[in-house]
Length: 79
Image (cartoon, rainbow, N blue to C red; front, side, top):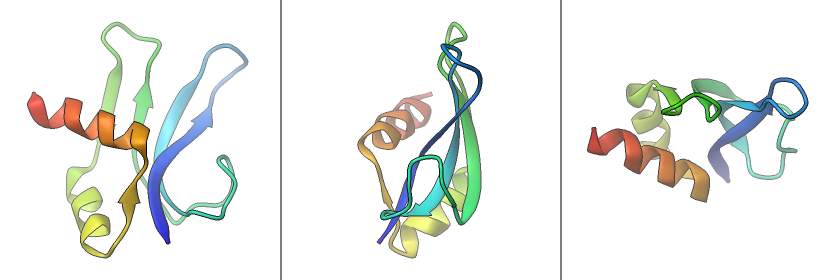
């Protein structure tokens, strides 16, 4: 099954994340299929850059967003 989830990047104690489409069995920071956005929680407010077109295409193909991604997607659709 495919998941839309966060991949952690950045230095120790300074996380930033890439939003990726990956196989659910792959490790969190392992191989992914496609990069569809970025998320930086350290800024105020958090910086969220998403390619909604690609995300919608992957959801149509059967990819499921993780719980964290559902929350981020809800934040961006309200704006």
